[in-house]
Image 1 (cartoon, one colour):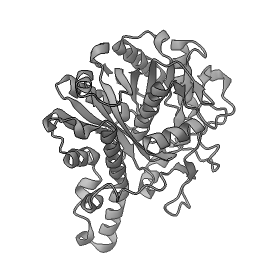
Image 2 (cartoon, rainbow, N blue to C red):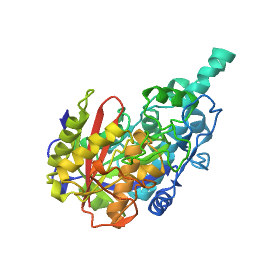
Image 3 (cartoon, rainbow, N blue to C red):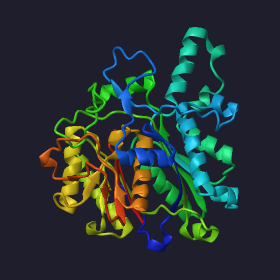
Image 4 (cartoon, rainbow, N blue to C red):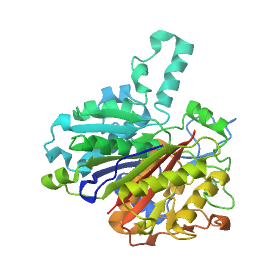
Length: 409
């Protein structure tokens, strides 16, 4: 288990740009309006013959077209997941007014997260190999499927020549990427392009997810993903995510950055072997608060991991009730409107948390009508005005990865 050194308020990195591609909204403000209105992006799993797959609902990003944003050469080289990341990155950089920043390219880093890589492209090219022979396989197969493809393509596209990396820890990776970005800023970079996206809805990707037994088999999109509910039956996968511009606060101030959505004031990460999930999550949450220099009483809301697996939900709710008191802090999971986007899901939760800090409002955990009483949570079931100074974002990845961050006004 690890944690970064204690941060100070003056040194905490600031988010100056956000770009979102999500099942219920393409573009940051479209996503946010849909989320506050409780509009869901969940629907039937489509795109291939789903007979034989015990998954019926997913969070598809509909109407997404990368062609107006990316050159034909880049479209040929990339998977859908990378295209979403590149478009979200373009929007985040525009939101931060990066074009006028005058950054030295060696002072800008790129840190992203991925969980399944370019699975759709990989499946397509492997099918070509078996049915048509090696001569028909794209020369971009070797790079398009790779976890670091989004990092590399973003770095090349925007000419950023600072540190580059990718974090692979399923949902937790979306927060680990932010911690890596903070580390880069402490080492002297002026800005970091960071975040995560995912596109795990190809036949091969779904096949890889099903054996774990964590996906909801429910056919009704309104009832398929219900964390902390009496009817919780697993999560619904989705695609999309969010990208950010994260800057040293002094650098952002010097250039007059137009937006300062919030600060990354704390982070911690850990690994939970089988049977140790609750203990490790509790420890990581406390380490993240220590890193931010905050007592639990100063946390105003929690964006939950919300896996909708009864045992995992019980562990998470027990940790939160023990730390903050029963029903002691508002808890929300806006991912019920999008599905669980893996590496992109934690990034999207961060986007929602930053927008909540901006607008002083909490988005709902939509669809949950029968919260299980034993969870002892103040679950936000409808959009709720709130006085928000500090919020906690939790993420757990399959296999035992745990990551928690603290975001502050």
